[in-house]
Amino acid sequence: MRLLVGTVALALLLPAVPASADERGRALESLVALQRACREAEAPGRRELYSVELPPGTWRFGPFGEVDGILPVDTRRNLRAFGGSAALIPSNLETVGVIATERRARELSRVAPRSTLRIGFFLGFDEPWRTHCLVRPAVGVTTVRMDVAFVELVGPRGTLVAREGGDRLAAWLDDAELDAIPGRGPRGAMGSASVSGAGSVPAQWQQAIAAANRGSVAQAVGRCHAEGIARGADAEGQVVVRLRVDGASGRVREGEVELSTLGDRREADCIAGALQRLELSPGGTGLVDLSVPVRLRN
Image (tube, rainbow, N blue to C red; front, side, top):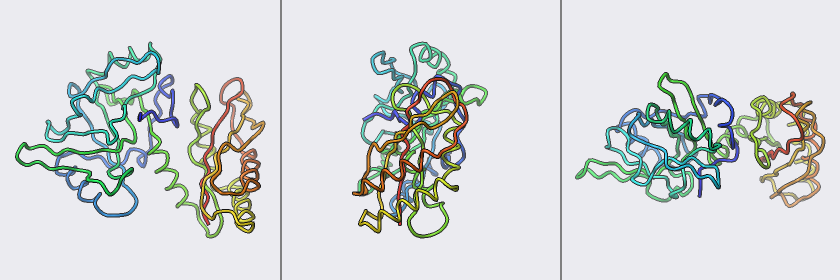
């Protein structure tokens, strides 16, 4: 498994976009704070997003993968935080890194020795019943199984040099957006879009999609879901819609269903039609295929 999170794939070919505070999580600045987070994670409920920073010289990138275009963080000996008193291990031993071109990988590797690595993670996001942390007083090390959400490279002057997000982060943010929708009854929320194939989603498109969760498109999605439930569709589920967008104008030319868990094709098609009403600003050239996940709730 890789932490190459399709929602921000190839974002490193462009200047890194700063994340909001919600997307950065709670910064853990000491071993005590980390151990407190471990205790908090033992409680049931929605997972919290945490982050830690590894100072320059305490981490490094591994060799760039020319085939898959991945510049990985070297995790062979675990990632050490707080002077070595905490060992951070990706929960599924996935590759933690960023997607880049060969040239961009060289640039990031040059700046890495002078940069801080910020890692965002959850505890118990994938398998909440497992042990998240192991405190070993005899050796003075706390071992943490982290479900990685994002990685950021922060330059010497505090500038965000690169950021790569993950599917866990996207799902977590989608849940938060869904909960934030006012009202009751059948409704839906669009999550972060991803590009089918090479490329990245323009930031203004992501913002427009998020804003549409509180407008006429969201209302149309809610009507589709209400009609689907009346026919026997599942009350909760997900639909992924592929939108073909004219990059030069931002106009959505067509939409089709990629995936649906609702058990009602008519509802899924209705939702795809609703998303074709999205109003996007010009964001490039040529045709762009966007995959937009929609979570439904009654």
